[in-house]
Every structure is written in C-alpha cells, then in structure tokens.
Amino acid sequence: MARYTEAKCRLCRREGQKLFLKGDRCYTDKCAYERRPYVPGQHGRARKKTSDYAVQLREKQKVRRIYGIQEKQFLSYFHRADMMKGVTGTNLLAQLETRLDNVIYRLGLANSRTQARQLVRHGIFLLNGHKVNVPSLQVKIGDEITVREKSKKIPVIQEAQDVIARRGCPDWLEIDGAALKGNVKAMPVREDIQFPINEQLIVELYSK
Image 1 (spheres, helix red, strand yellow):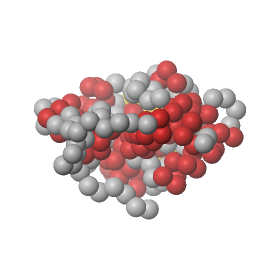
Image 2 (cartoon, one colour; image 1 turned 135 degrees about the horizontal axis):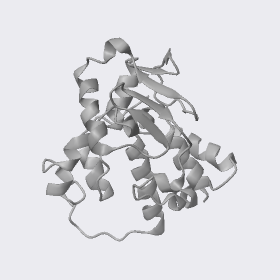
Image 3 (cartoon, helix red, strand yellow; image 1 turned 90 degrees about the horizontal axis):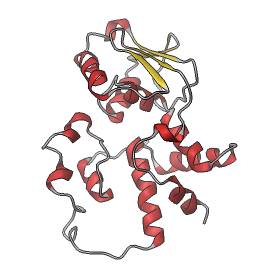
C-alpha cells in the first residue's frame, strides 16, 4: 500500500492546524507549523475562497492524515460505519480509534501513530498473548496489549514510559507503565476524542 513519505509538517500546514504527526517534536519550538502557520507552496499566504465542498474535503483529509489512512481504506471504514447502528460519524471515529496502531499510540507505547504502525509490523507487540503484525486490527473490550519480553530493552520502548507519564491515557484504556502492558476497558465514545474533528462534514461529503 502506498504511503506518504514527504515531510509530515507540510500536512499540518496544509490543514491549518497541528495534527501531531511527529510526536513530541510537535510540542517544541522545532515544530514547522509554529514557525510557518500557512499553507505550503509559492502561493501559500494568498487568500483563497473556500466552497462548502472544499471545507468538507479538508475535514476528510485532516482525519485521514491524523490516523494515517489511505483513501480506499478510509472509504471502507465509512461504508462500514454507515451500516452500523447509531450515528455514522461517531461510528467512523470509533473504528479509527480502535485500530491497533492507534490504541498503542493512545497507551503511550509509541511516540506517534507512524511509529506505532512500524513497531506493530516488526512484531514487537502481543495481543492477548499472541504475536500480531497487522496495524489495522480492531481491538475489543477485554483485549490485552503487551510488549514482547525480548523487545522491552529497545530504546524506543524504554522511552515509552516517559511518554506514558507525560501524555496520560484515555479513560477507555488502562495502562501499566512499569509492565508496558495495556487493556481495553471499554469502547471509545465521542467525548473521548478531544481533537477538533467535525465528523458531520465527512458524512455530508460522502453522502452526495
């Protein structure tokens, strides 16, 4: 599957807000969005008119980039959310939140979702005692995520304890920082997603 390999800070500038794609770097003065908070490119500072469609498209692109999802996969999540009971937009965000790579990031076991995805692919984590290497796996209530014993000495994993203490853990997850182990206590609700996302714009875009 194709992945975006250019500078991630350009994505934050394009969407007009921090997407925290580079982990702790986004909290420092090295953040490119802090230094150049305008759209990248030669005409980045020019004023442009935005249509309703453009606003909806940008919201969809923003969410895609936050979670690192390609268009085809994102559309598949939307169709699945639309067939589920409840609010389509909320169902969509809940599916994205319960991806294994996102849960590992939320637990503080990785500095960014990109790093979490890479660690999963390298087989560093166990899900309910079994080795997994698929970042898109959906976790369920009661699932336990642990770091393999022989991987706990990897510098990135050792730094995770500092990340856990600094970032904290959402209420629907539980983390044991010393044991590098996390549990899924409940499914996420809309209030658990603090990032400013207007999911209704995405629903309107795909409903046309």
